[in-house]
Length: 331
Image (cartoon, rainbow, N blue to C red; front, side, top):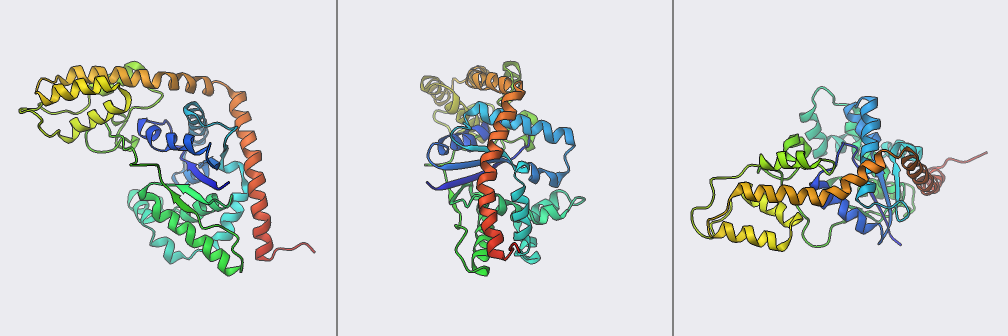
């Protein structure tokens, strides 16, 4: 069975964009491949999170992914820092990475612009650590979006360079694994683009939001003055609301508001109330499971302990061969 590896960013609460994007895909993949999903707490250190923030976000994201359907019995779910073999492979790969190619990375340039007062070496070598995360389990495939393809290309380059330098095709060259069909793009509530926390708390509907919060956010969503002629093209903010409606509402509900829009009788306030109610109904069982997992210390600890055990078994086998190929020997 082919191996799939993907990281989970410990950046706090998941929103609907995360759910319909990565999370639903992960849940499908775990029954089709040998999957390793890790919470990337090493990576988060490039922004120097406070210790309580780091621990809290790891706890939050673990509870939320479990609540969304990741099953530790079907996949290996672990915390990056619980597998020290990753850090050792990262060290070895750094010896094969060149400063010039790392500095040319688009993601590094973007980070330099975004945080000019914190251009640390971890930012520069981020692609190397990402490569270590992937190839420590000798992954064949990595689920990525189009924006992450350059990162995966660097990982392939480093793996190929290792194979060539040490004369053995040890590491598979990981291939991108896309979603079936067109990827689902979940819009934000401000009408400007995709849903994301970076655009502001009010732009995103989080899976842990309660019904009152969801209603408040949706009722503030951007719209326009309404259509003035039948079948008028929708403005981007209104099209975004219809996209959300199609994700969480019944076909009859969508049809009702499509008809109302096309015959110029739509009332956006009515549509928003329905959308808020449907989002709340959709997320309610997930929110309940999140709360249950977050409050179960024993379960979270057991999940991470079991994940660490399985991940280290895979990683240590890889690292033993890496050390042999490099030339480390016992006397």
